[in-house]
Image (cartoon, rainbow, N blue to C red; front, side, top):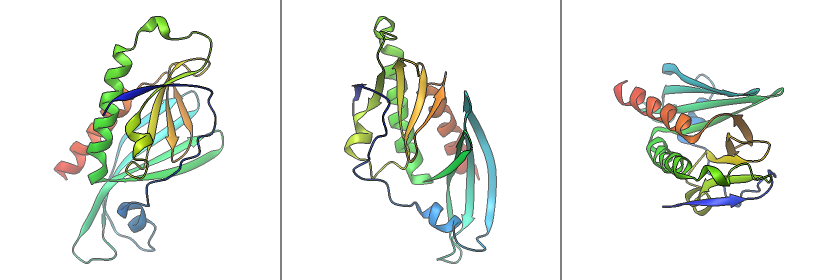
Length: 181
């Protein structure tokens, strides 16, 4: 899986497919769901944008004795909020893609950045398999948004001065928390 250089304007991206609601999201939205464990893992911030990452373990409302694990991300910016949910089985594949993107950003030649137009570096994995990843990100390396980590799904939000490595570290912390609890 390789990353691809994306050039263009910061426009709303119409996703052709979107990941279905995760088991964690379906469980959390049930009335009276029992939270077995909850821990704020990290907060990602950048010029007004905010993402709060919380590890959750909830009792499965559909199967007694079973728990559902994952992460809720609460995005907020300029008066709006939106949540995204990732099941624990989705965390490592997402982290792997974000790790590769982080490595590509570090290898990216600095002389190509800030050449006037908008420029983004992203992963073909998100484009090729949008239904697999409940959150999708890219990196703005040129233009008014540079540098910045941009979530493009489930909502568009830009975290100025942040890089994919920041998100990879947060995902690693969430994976470790869920593994040990």
